[in-house]
Amino acid sequence: MFGVEPICRVLTSHGLKIATSTYYAAKDRAPSTRAVRDTELKMQISRVHRDNFSVYGVRKVWRQLHREGIPVARCTVARLMRDLGLEGARRGKKIRTTVRDDGHDRATDLLQRDFTASRPNERWVADFTYVATWSGIVYVAFVVDVFSRAVVGWSAATGKRAKLVLDALDMALWRRDRA
Image: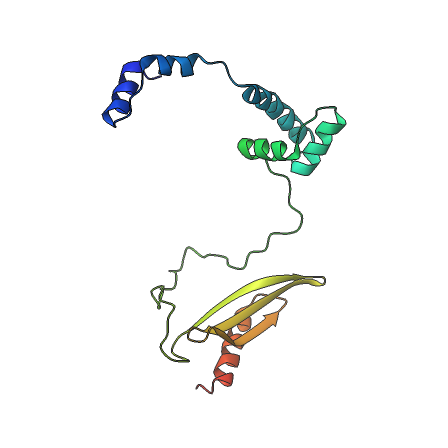
């Protein structure tokens, strides 16, 4: 890796005084008890995760380790799974509100990230999102007046079509008596 001299030279050039013996002491030091235990647990966690089709999350891996007689804290399992990059499967379908088309240019930022207005109806911003309900996903579009931060128009639908956003804009125009 690196020699002792270059490391000490770099550290001393930045005003840090370090003895060569300090470097060798840190380099030759045996791993801590926690590091050794973490290495053993990482193998067990990886095995449990892999044996269960890589769908087990922290809670289920932790419970399985306890069933196998391996005592470990849940927060330790969470930390080590994060270090290993392991995640459990998430229930439900991932919702995508925007599907990007590389064939078209992105809309320009007309406000230049300046969300201030000196009077009502000077600037409006619009967005849409989704809400999970017991009966399914509902998409909601809304238009906000930047001056008052009030919702001036909104629309909800079970499908994400352009009409959803246009209805919200129509409501905003109607409510603010705009042509």
